[in-house]
Amino acid sequence: MKQSWKIVGGGSQGGLLVRSGQSTSSDQLSERLATGSVVLQVQLKGERLQYLLQEGSGPAEGWISISLSGKALAVPQQPEGVMAPPEKPTNVNGLAGAKDVSAAIVEAGVRASGKTAAQTKSKEVQDWLCSGSSGPLPKWPRTEHPAEAPCMKPLVQLSDEEFEKLPFLTGEQTKITKAQMKQVWDTQEPGAYYGMKFPHSIELIRSMGADWLTQAFRAAGTLPKDNRVTALKDVVCLSLDPAKGEALGGAAIKLLLVVEYERQHKDLHSKLFVKIPTVYVAMDAERYKMRTGVGEELEIFCNRLVSPVLPIATPKLYFGDFCRKNGNYIMIFEALAFAKDWIPLADYRPFEIHPMFDKNKDWQVTECGRRHYIALGRAMAKLHAAHYTGKLGSRERLAKVFP
Image (cartoon, rainbow, N blue to C red):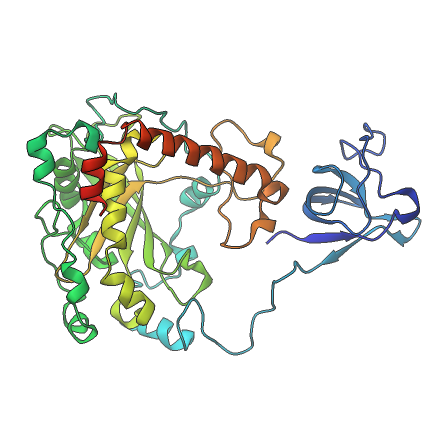
């Protein structure tokens, strides 16, 4: 979490003097940082603070002095709305009795390695996860793919016969009662999409391994028939416990797989991001509703049929399936590496991805998310245009797939 500072000095001069660099002899910016403003710390070098503007007026970024002749010009503060951790466990992410739930998850065998998420990461994986660079993202339209690294055929390219064979939503899983869920949540049944059994737990992913990944990717059309996954080198637990802050949303377990192919290719990703459902012991009313809903099924449909031709860059889906008899699912994407820290936008390297930020915490984002939301607005406009012009598929097909 970034340290925030409140500007308390400079009132008689119309704010603090801001410079372009750390040195007090670097160029002075034309605008001053207003007294009362709140900034986020990028780095602190002695008495010099590089900041990003959070609240108030003045330059969006720059360097200031935090004190002058023993008088404070800026003081550290706790960000607004951030509370100190409670002494006792409370309802965390919708789960009452977080410690009890965590213990139950361990007992259920979710932590197959017997280690925490951080302990399972090798230094190589840790460095990559925080590198911020996953390489160039594919550009739209992504209708051309090398034969060595094919992509799923999007909705707009399906023949009428292929379209009618799609497993359209039935809502069958919505009829599973909570009592029934307790009996079926850990069963393995064929998926609705490819008719094959798939792993829905860490243990099953490890045991089914490279052979299943080969079979799955070939079935999905994301791996040529003459290539195969030769090794599942690592299963890294990114997020296990929905009762903790590591959950990254709390509705699923998230993993990173490190694989090897018989024939490597720059467009075949060796690091893969996986989503699988939480275990039954972690399933409160809200997660039970998610498990028996159609949200994950629609997410798979979207990434399978629409993402390949979206006018914005999205991670490639290698495999996704959903079982309507027990609500289990799996999604396997190319993994993306996020930058570790927020820095001025001009300092990011080409194709570097800024850090993930928590929901409703825009103050974490560079420039308080101003340019972030501009980019989102532009992306939404492109998405609307692609839909309106039929580039995602006909409206009749989209309406049948996404009722």
